[in-house]
Image (cartoon, rainbow over all chains, first blue to last red; front, side, top):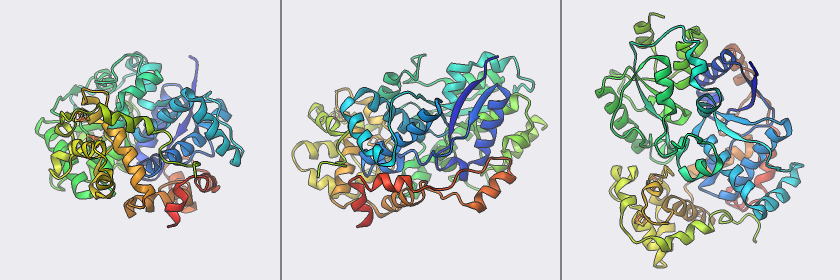
Length: 292
Length: 156
Ligand code: SF4
Ligand code: SF4
């Protein structure tokens, strides 16, 4: 089996606030023969600057792309905002020579030069398109048939669809109706719980300005998922995960799982190695159901 | 000064306002409008189209936009409402109307390279959990941001 190598782009949230997600991603990658390389030099993706100054965000994103280019590696991200921002920056810079020239003038001041030789992929897309669920299926040693799982992709996993289409990140052409998490759930043997509004935003973008509205939006989804009888909500983004976790009544908690945690459980990995204890909402009920 | 102009990548989006024929599909699918009836993306586009963008730039609710892009996917015309709102936020920032919370976050990115600083203490915690320590801050993002128009806003 050829080992696939990627530079792991953690961004700001994951390495500080979502250690369980990071831990599970690393263990699952190891189990599937994917090498995740930690590069010094990766910083904020640029997303928090975008609303203030799109060019500043682009420059910061380009700086990160340069780090991966220097290492000769494609980038894999765990966060939807990182994935979206780096993908869009790479696309714009590859397509627009004048913009590239201008960005390179600024990057030269810190001895960097963007060349356009890397690629950006969300870890979920790597599993979905480059590894394939068949590879996982053969290794499932703990089928999750008694679990009911609802999925939430998060906006910047697939919107704006124009960007992911043009970038070639969605060879299956399901940019408008993403299905990677559904394929993952199917591979693990769990039951996929459908619910209304599953492609709706979690509301996380309002956490800084109007946390009350952000939590109201997330709470709506959580209640709908609970009403449908799901054991857990499966997410692909740290901001979605945090917002859903913080928008729940304490007496009726819904487990929030990061997708590598679900896959890791099905692959038979030790639940303690998958960082379940590090999630904001304890996954005790789910572990009980699985007897692990 | 041309360097660092926030609209560099967004000017084309602003031009798409002309394609908007006020069908309101954007607002009817907008999650923020569902939470707060006082928030209306269609109206923002209308005001910008008739030269009243000043009212939009001064409206604090402009910043409620989640950039979820739901409106843009629904728009039946060639307008790009989500990108238009992003460009309008950039303009509002240039004018000094950006919310303090967003500027504070940007200052952290400029100072620490990340929204959440990674220090020795946190790296020890990571290692205890079986995760590698991350590299220390070099100040490179601060140097890059000093080349952009955002720098003045962060100082101001
Ligand atoms: S959906 Fe498009 S055309 Fe309709 S009001 Fe909104 S921006 Fe204008
Ligand atoms: S991008 Fe902004 S205006 Fe458009 S639907 Fe989302 S929150 Fe509403």
